[in-house]
Amino acid sequence: MSANPLAFDAAAWRADRLDEVELALSQWVGVGAPDALAEPMRYAVLGGGKRIRALLAFAAQEAVQGEREAGLRAACALELIHAYSLVHDDMPCMDNDVLRRGKPTVHVQFGQASALLAGDALQAQAFELLTPEDGAVSLAHQAKLCALLARAAGATGMAGGQAIDLASVGIALDEPQLRQMHRLKTGALLQASVLMGAACANAVSDRTWNALTTYADALGLAFQVVDDVLDVTADAVTLGKTAGKDAANDKPTYVSLLGLEPAKALAQRLLEQAMNALVDSDLEDTRALAALAQLVVQRNS
Amino acid sequence: MSANPLAFDAAAWRADRLDEVELALSQWVGVGAPDALAEPMRYAVLGGGKRIRALLAFAAQEAVQGEREAGLRAACALELIHAYSLVHDDMPCMDNDVLRRGKPTVHVQFGQASALLAGDALQAQAFELLTPEDGAVSLAHQAKLCALLARAAGATGMAGGQAIDLASVGIALDEPQLRQMHRLKTGALLQASVLMGAACANAVSDRTWNALTTYADALGLAFQVVDDVLDVTADAVTLGKTAGKDAANDKPTYVSLLGLEPAKALAQRLLEQAMNALVDSDLEDTRALAALAQLVVQRNS
Image 1: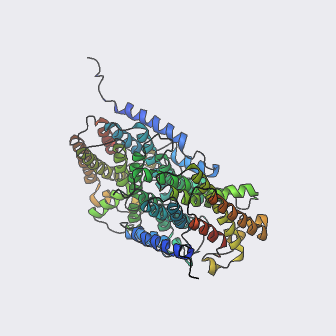
Image 2: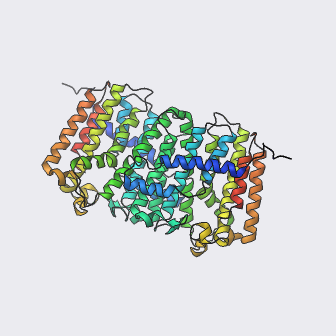
Image 3: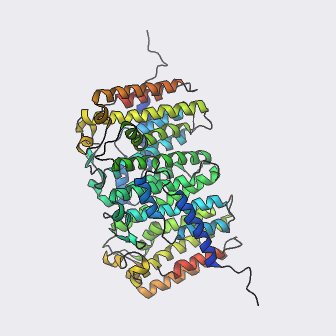
């Protein structure tokens, strides 16, 4: 028997997309900026990170057979928003973290003022990447991608979730409240990753759009549940960041609320929900999206 | 003799537009956000500020006979970017200012973490306002407005200028270096105000676009020169913020570089440049733009 030439090689798929997004980011991030700003911007973005958001955008863009240039720019813009949120989140007035992806955090390396400005500039550059002035992406796609990203990043998305998180330290959130917080804090940008990829097509059926929304919703929540599990089961070297910090900060987590084993079981159920949603879509090839959902739940860092 | 019914009443024009932008901002800023985030966002934006950027956007949009809804959203988005930059700029790791528009700064009132998040969310909301999903603004206009705003706010615009400013404390910049810093730090967003207004039309002649660029460039620089003059001639009550802080921080200014009277003369020359540029355009009615240039140079706060 020979190997099935049509078999999907998830690792190879991922490696190719990671090469593509890393190359594009290194060609774009902070280019043209004053050195004092370009350095912390590039330090924050390049040479690290799992690029889950970029991979989700690619997988969705490919599943809907959307425009690649739009998909690549969406992937990079999502990573810039994610990177800026980490830079600001690590600052002393927020989580006061000194270690990220195994390196000193941006404010430790460059000072707080540079970290603040670099984060601000990364957010703006995300929208610059989505609006190329050379016609590489249609104006309609540009507008739709900006609309999705702005809402996912803003006060009714990621920033809103961070504000709830900040206000909830030491407060006993129940499971619906915790879910709502995470739906905004990490879920909104993960969902946008999938939907921005899908928005790179000229049209997507309602059935597929809804299925992708359900997939992304389940995947986003699963991501956070797994994060909470890893916070208590993994060590700092594997995580590349400080482990056990949620417990140390008295922050509510799925593990503190449900217990470790039930949290793991919840992650598995959410994975199944995500997989079932893909089956409900009109998409022909959802193998990359399926592989990413498995990756999110089965990762160890 | 009776009054000329066609005479332009600059004060009435301004008062009407201020009403319009304040109402829209109060209806939009932070709406839907968690309370802990909506409060500092609204505090940062509402009930204060000269709204120069909004007025410039309105004046340009009206001069090119562009779409009003797009002009209004551009005006508000510009004010959100400006407000976020002040919130972050006032933080202890930056200018460490405690007074702004006669009130405690956002981090003094709400804490540093809330100030950081509110600024981040305001930047995102600027792009939300530019991309309404109800068809109120064409997708082409949405994309062009996002492109202009992102570049003006980002690393090759405002954030870049702030980084240069930060790196220049105690360093003797010469006049070209100082001009370049201000061209980015305050000039880029002021220029975007004019060009975003102009981008609300379906088409603008090259002659008019270039004339408005020249107008905005001169006005942006004049704004900063006047700021530097007021920093040494006005008191904190009139300014609504700490006076004399540039000198105290050993920051280079037009006054420290040129002297007070030559700086005032430079502002006058820039005003003339701005006025001459308007004459060079194809625009029929530039009275509001002319009045705003005069306002920028002749303001006392």
